[in-house]
Amino acid sequence: MRRIVGWPLGLLLSLGSLGAQPAGKGLDLGRQWKVHQWILPAANLDGKWTRIGTSNDFDVDYTNRVTKLKVYSRVTVVSRTATKIVISIPKSNAKLVGNFGMDGRTIRGTLEPCPPGSSCGWSAETDIQPPQAEVARKKAETRGLSTDDLGTIWRVHDFTNEDYDYYGTWTMPKPGTDAIEFSYKNKADGAVAKGSFVIGTLSGRVLLIFHQGRRKYMRGTIQADGKTVKGTADWCRNPSQCGWEATILK
Image (cartoon, rainbow, N blue to C red):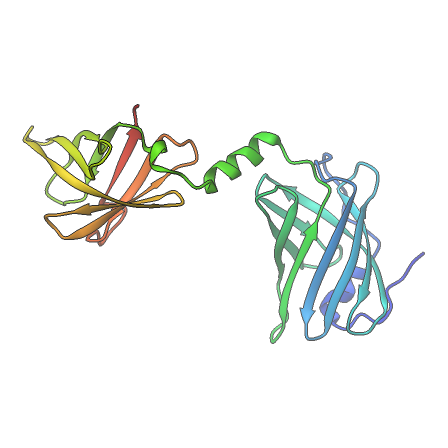
């Protein structure tokens, strides 16, 4: 039986036990991970985790950068979603909590609890094969857009003022112009409002729109589907009750 050598913190001695918790239904976890785990200043660990069969358990094989000693142990994946993973350390209340990167394979996270006065964390490069749909969704969320993606007609709900609740359309600027023409009707009393805003910069997925009357900006974020927009305004004090939403119709 392998054993731990020279583990520096009492909290992490528990990681040395080879008695893993019972594994649940097999998850998509890959076969081998390259892992870096740290509890500075005492421990700075590099090595690999190797999955045991089709279980949720991994054998841990580390080298401590601080002491230069080998560390062997075992951990168990308790739960995993497309974005988050939780890993238990047997015979301990400690756990590793991580978030998946955009590629669905890299992980970065924390050790909970972290000893007082220490800096804790971990990262991993895995061989997990992420669902292609999830990878495509994450890429879409960050893909930079151009004005060509804005379409020509938006259906809009504008509630950036406390005293009105407008529904209507925006017509995007024609080539060579910068005016967004709006046509609204107030839900409460049917009052009609028409006018224009000035389209501003599009940075990534965030669009700035200048409100001439207020001399301030409205800001909208185009969602991953490329068709819906959620926005706020510089004069909004409570974004949950003041903002605007839109759907790009064509």
